[in-house]
Length: 237
Image (cartoon, rainbow, N blue to C red; front, side, top):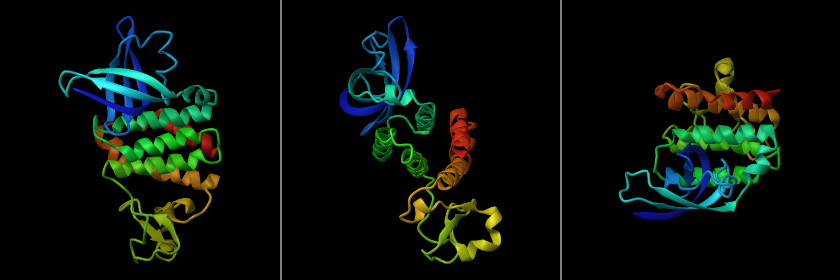
């Protein structure tokens, strides 16, 4: 069997004396691992870095086998990201959370969204809000999407400023005010065409962390990746 795709390197680990096992989030084949022969060579080490955009060819005798990757660079953006600690935290957080995706199940929207974030990493005013949207997209792809389109209590689409921790649905200002201490703040950039403020990003990360822990990590006995917690703390400082 053989297929070709493009992908983003998620993780790499050594295998034997000269090879490596890479895990790639691909556009059409989802999260997929493969053996890269010579992956520890001087030529391949700069390519096999998390965050790099690559062309991959996967070959195996049977679909369920690990298979082998032939990998070629398309956009080696990892080096620039690694120079900035905060951006590196964001990349590491995405690659860690992407491990919750089932193997070999297509999630093209998440791949595209991650690619957009990585391309925007040179603008610290842009990528944090995109990261919040990516985490919301991850929840949606795993079947736990939030409904932020209308008020859970009234059906109104106006003044949506809260999110219910029970239902994961938006709540309007009027309906939620009596219970505001028990509700999450809904960042304006998620419900309206507004620029994201630093407070909005912090509220967004708090929102996604709650539902990721509740629906994705907790049921699997997993904790929130430490790098994700560090990132949230740094952005809130």
